[in-house]
Image (cartoon, rainbow, N blue to C red; front, side, top):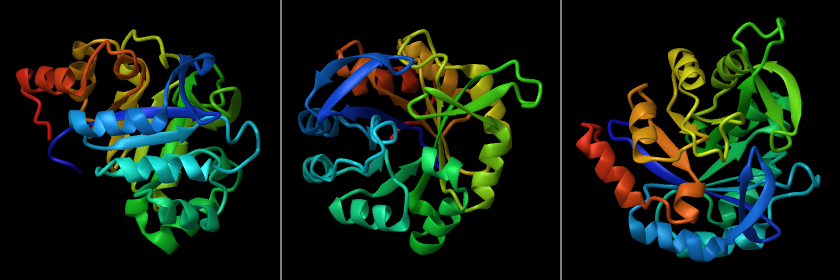
Length: 255
């Protein structure tokens, strides 16, 4: 696992534009993905995550042209996800300039996809995106369930069990997004993040709910390897430098 905490802006893209909402609903335009990518790279972001949030809902592949233009503007690792359904999809995205590939819905539909991608390209390429929320379903013992299609549908899968299976299948990193906290700027779901951290043997990225520098500090204390946010960066509430300075002041090593 990483020694220094990574700070990662996330570009949720639909229709060629970066969007952001609350719980993936009421999406508002937040800018051009290529321009934002270039800005974050210049501001000192450690990585960049690009998620085509409507690809699974619309049953189509990731917008390759936007990925290519984004990759041309950033010189830091770029993770791309949304609509990835096959080894061929991964190959095309890597060819377009992505460094890592994030999968979610298709892997839940066919878990063997994770094994196939890890076998073909190595686990360093493969990120599992877990959009999870709290549940009272007694059949899911952790109390957290996985959702799909941008958080619109319950997968009926226990989040901790799914993380364990994915790691066994060769996933190299987990991107954990709290659907309850997503876009709220009320802070990360610390309980869920801690529960996943306890059973997760690969790097863990915390996402969903960042609103203040203190939010990043609190989730860093759990032992995550990276923090990811969107709204606070897109709308200028915080800069990458603000977050890194706050983390350093709290004794957290950052890149």
